[in-house]
Amino acid sequence: MSRLFLLRHAKAAWAEPGGRDYDRALTEDGRDQAVAIGAAMRAGGHVPSVVVCSPARRALETWQGVATALGYKPGQALMSGSLYGSDPGAYLTIMRNNGDADALLIIGHNPMIEELAFAFARHGDEEARQRLARGFPTAGLAVFSFAKPLFEASAADARLDAFLTPERA
Image (cartoon, rainbow, N blue to C red; front, side):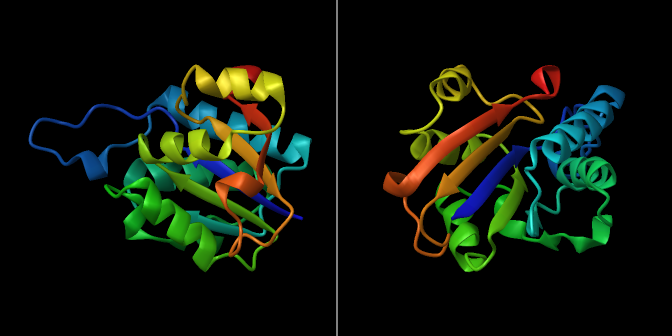
């Protein structure tokens, strides 16, 4: 069995006047969210073997908080520019390209992360599916399992096992 963790970056500040969206930093609440969701991942046994992260500042800062809570070094994540400003297909490609991993964490952005999670959430835990259907908040984590390796997996094979948010961690 393989697992996929889809994590939306934590709460970020608005861009400074003249600043780029790409450079938005986490707020203090966002930093707390990142550590909280990382602790919930550790407590729930949702520990990745491979991490692929958007290089946008808010995603990197989210990974730093999660990594601290998991006992990882922040430098252990792979960076992929296609996680920023792309489409759900790019996220699926990253999943398949890292499909040898038994537990893959992708840290990215909405609406792409939400759209991929919705596509995969046809089956699974009913409460988690209902919570996900209400939206994918900042620092939300969708936990999926697949009977196949991720490089072969499709939406038909996916099972939503959990949907965690910092408030319900």
